[in-house]
Image 1 (cartoon, helix red, strand yellow):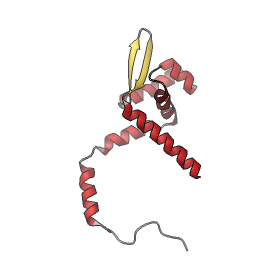
Image 2 (cartoon, rainbow, N blue to C red):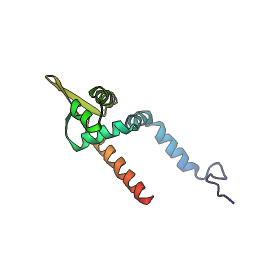
Image 3 (cartoon, rainbow, N blue to C red):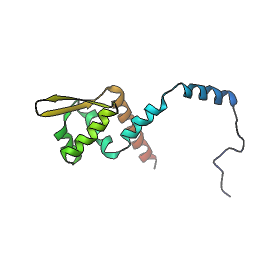
Image 4 (cartoon, rainbow, N blue to C red):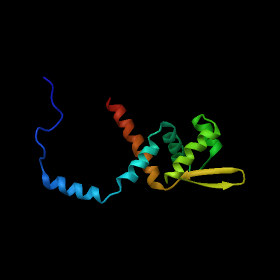
Length: 122
């Protein structure tokens, strides 16, 4: 016999349901989903993590870190910038990227810490 992982009734606590639904309607969850979508790519999370470790990195250095071409690194950095997760500055022929703010760094670090915990649990 297998256990069902769904409820057998339609609603247990309607007060909680209504309170949470009202709060969700006031939040911009679409913006949050876009942030996580941008970080959902393995290469971009590596880029973001590299930017967590160093305050600022040149595009060509990011390419070397992730083992890609400069064009590929630039593509991923541009996407992170367009999503509001990274910022850049130009210095002559060089372009340097950094994370937009400490919140982005925290998101990446927390996600990696959680991933390690899950792996340890098996």
